[in-house]
Image (cartoon, rainbow, N blue to C red; front, top):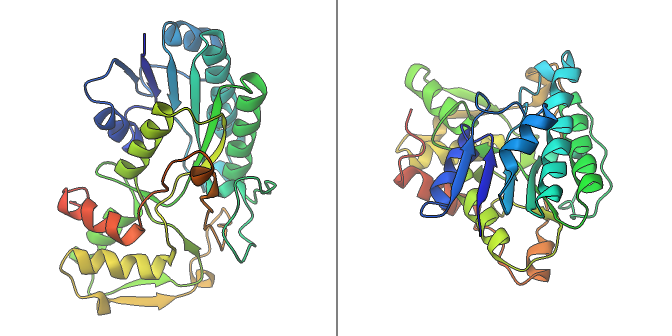
Length: 283
């Protein structure tokens, strides 16, 4: 019997995963429902499921610099526990990971097999989560790396920019960090498509295609929302020093999809327009 288990079901991605799996047999656990750092609790919860999706994470990137042990517990130990439980149930596991496992020094898109070199505590804990999941369940773990997520709930960059637009004449946004804005609804559908396929376990980069700076992304957000993009002003990351270093370049390559006969995700501009039409950018 095909049964899906979602950890981290209360977040942006978790909610969109539930929508993408509507009509199927789903068990959805929020952070309050399940402590992923408790192996026995995880084992009990996962029993009887054929597909496990780990969308739970400690995502407070700056806080992780001073709370790395707390981030490690969720991002690494939690991933390991879910992989153990998935293996024991002969289930396929999707471990959602991040562009922060790379150092951001590349000049062309990161291939799926690129060696990891995180530069922040958050990145280190997510990289370790990837490693531990694959050690525990090597033949059944899909590492799905994503980046620059936005969606209909919770704090995210797109909704923050629209909130600022309501109270500020202009917003200043950095031009020197490049990545791939990714709608969680598209990501959720891509994960479901992966699990529905016969694709082998391994690493897959699931971001909307193309690339943009945060500045370009914000101008497009204003444009689709009917606001004047001239209100978005350029600046550099030197003006926004934060506790955790950010990768300057977070563009991920998508070659793994074509190798298994699946299509990569659509362009980020098309996704942003669809997200707005769907009401996912409302504040």
